[in-house]
Length: 183
Image (cartoon, rainbow, N blue to C red; front, top):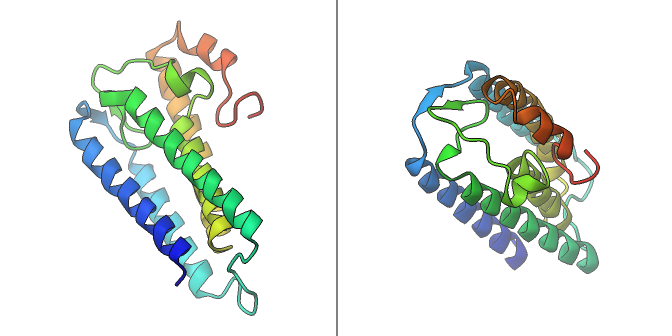
């Protein structure tokens, strides 16, 4: 295992620990989407199945181009930074995907000024960076989690439109879902 692999894995682990620890201070959850847990389990099972089944069998999955690795590390760090920045802005309003909080607030500042789902954007950017820096295996995670995040974002947006019928439609028109100025 290369040092770069260990460093990136260590940052992913630290990010995960931070994420779990930060969830302790959130507002009470009013409702959770039962399907969100099932969808996450399916994604993990499919990802493990693809990797175990040899989706890349006979092909090198390690990136050996120093330029791509450096670019990948930069994207990875930007993605992690974006997700953490967005998590701080959400504060106690953060919840697992597709959950509803008691006394929710509409956050439209910080990274939410540019995209409606910057946590999803940041995690996907970090996964793309990991793909370029470490291994092509991560492309399967990018595709699977990308589909899951788009699905979650659409469910969450329907909830926000119901909770904030006056403010959310205007906010939605003024921002993009995941990529500023594009998508």
